[in-house]
Length: 62
Image (cartoon, rainbow, N blue to C red; front, side, top):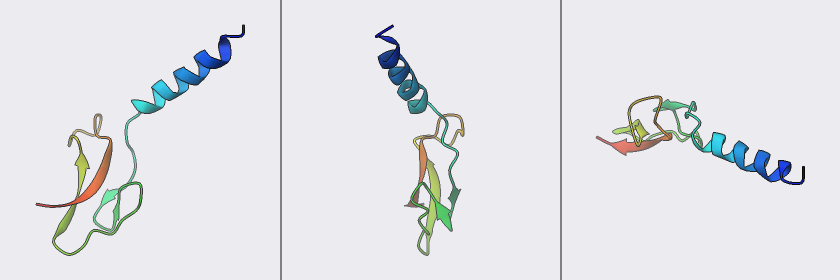
């Protein structure tokens, strides 16, 4: 039973690391920091446009 805590701890972080990003991804609310993208910038998902595999959003020039 003394191994239960480390196993639960590792399982939690493994699940969290593969969780889908569901935060904001708009020009006025971009990414976890809720940044407002400047004029001429777009809020884009990374590293993929696929919602199932993206890890976040960031302001970027086209």
